[in-house]
Amino acid sequence: MPCLLYCVTQPKQIVKIAAGVCEGEVQSREMLGVQVYWSEIANPEACLGSAESLKKAALQFHQVLREILATAAPIPFRFPTLLESEDGIEQQLAEGQELYRAALERIGDAVQYEVVASWAEDEQVDLATPVSGREYLQRRSQATERVAAIDSKLKSVTAGSVREWRARQERKSHRWFALVPRESRDRFVASLRGAGPSQGVRLRLSGPWPPAEFITPPGEHGHHL
Image (cartoon, rainbow, N blue to C red; front, top):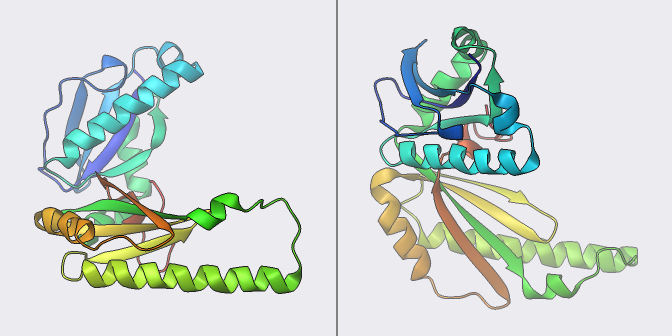
């Protein structure tokens, strides 16, 4: 029967979950030095074939990850990773075996939080309107400075509760990812909430999430398995 993969965790971290995608039973087994989670999907076409059913399945997929995250640090597969049968799971794992093991060892029992910064002045800017080279460079310089200021503030106020930071520039926002040991979560959130506002910038905190951005070693771009 076709099966959908959720994630891998450290071996012997078994979390019992009532139902997963398309109400399928969430199964777990240790293979090749990791614990892998999946569900059998009797009818993938009915379950994942339309935009509406795919959206519902994605919500169920993320709910399973959140339940596992309550006690273990899952490294998720890209949704939806479908295999023809359970027999293909070991082959799928064998292809990335070293990456999975190294990532799980490096991440340990840590979770991911995200901080998104958006600036009020950017929301008024029409990115489609041409600007002079001089104005463009001025904007770039200002953007770099303000990102650096927030970066410094985040790292300063959360010092001691974050193992690693990663960041990504997006069109009208900047996104930071924090790898936070499970026992430091409350301290991390409290330190950000107590930091006070920064003028002209809106910061949004979300998490905890599976540590998907930290799968690859530092310096390489994070991605799902």
